[in-house]
Length: 214
Image (cartoon, rainbow, N blue to C red; front, side, top):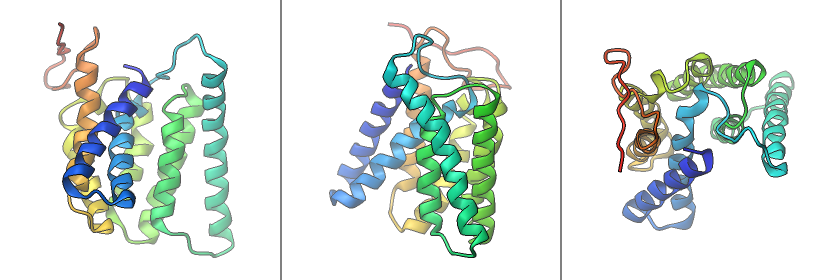
């Protein structure tokens, strides 16, 4: 599955959650954004989801992701060295935007940038005493170096992601954020199960790839 397909499915999951929990436009946008982002995060572990035959737009997105990560780290450094306070939710939102772009890149530089973003999130979580943000940062810092469609594409990853999202739910005081995030993440695995490569849902206990063919 391509990144845009996962993104579209995740957004649809978020829209359904918003219809169930709240139709307020601002709140609905949060459900949609969280579900769409969750649907992309499983692929922080692997190579680019873009075709090797890149269009001009794809190349622009990849370069924008790289420089977006650099800009993010610069902003964090500026706030840190000037002693200014930065909203933890703003940190998380900026990081999510950068990571969404970095999902589309590949290679050691991309992996290192993702890990640096993760380290920044761990630090921010420590400073603001937010365990969920530290957990998110740990996830982000660790997964880029894993084998593609490995541990992030298993049933075990879903409750881990849900635990992180539960902390965010308490922070935002919005019912259903954790469930929405888990459904968004799960949608990625279900969609990949429909591909020829399938998904090792029970890895490393069972190393077989599960596939659904029509």
